[in-house]
Length: 327
Image (cartoon, rainbow, N blue to C red; front, side, top):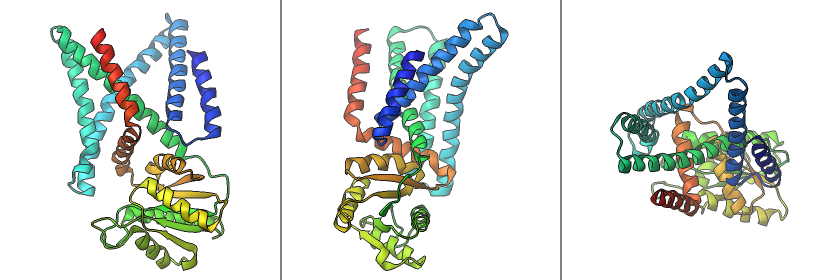
């Protein structure tokens, strides 16, 4: 296991240095760490099997895993309640509570099957549910761990452009979430001696009075920015179009260019994947988000990642179901 883990880690580092904006890197990193962790647990157990300290460490490790899962489920339930209080009674704000309920329900089902009379069919269904839960949990943990890791990567070049990604408006007003992106973009602009051009990117939604780009530009002008330093991209309706349409503006202004994009911290990694898909040489910078909002936000990003690579996940689910039918 140690050898496999080290090989995977070396492969991860090689690919990371070539192109860090790939979801496959998250799976490599998580698998390599898991292999090394399994070897450490085995090493502790095999070398300290008669040692009270070794046994205690093993019990602590294996005890913390189910305790952590239960705590995670309970935390999500409370977070869902907090989301409803602070963000309003909308279906989207129930996401963290719904996931917490699913986690605790699966644990409850496991306890029920453990104490109930053995039934081959129902127990097989539960094993299938556990396998599917394990698969999607691996994808989530891999994504979350790498997204956090990626967020803390420093930009090592001076950008020619700073792309600020839009989000929803309230009528024609910039809400706090978008304001945090704009403030961060201004900070980056000042950091680079006011040399980069800022591109505000976002079209007009059905419930918005103006385009996001227009409202964003007005916000920056009110903060004291110069009109000539702000470029508008007001046709995009999603993150991929933000990147693609903004790249066309950059190409028209300067043939060879480097850029950074600004979005909220939870969105940096997924947005960077879209930047790669748009062939935009761009690194992400994240603005701060309220802590209570992060669990729900990361869960939405995770669902977005699943949708981006849906056919791979459909294939994986089919393989799991197929293996269960032939057992």
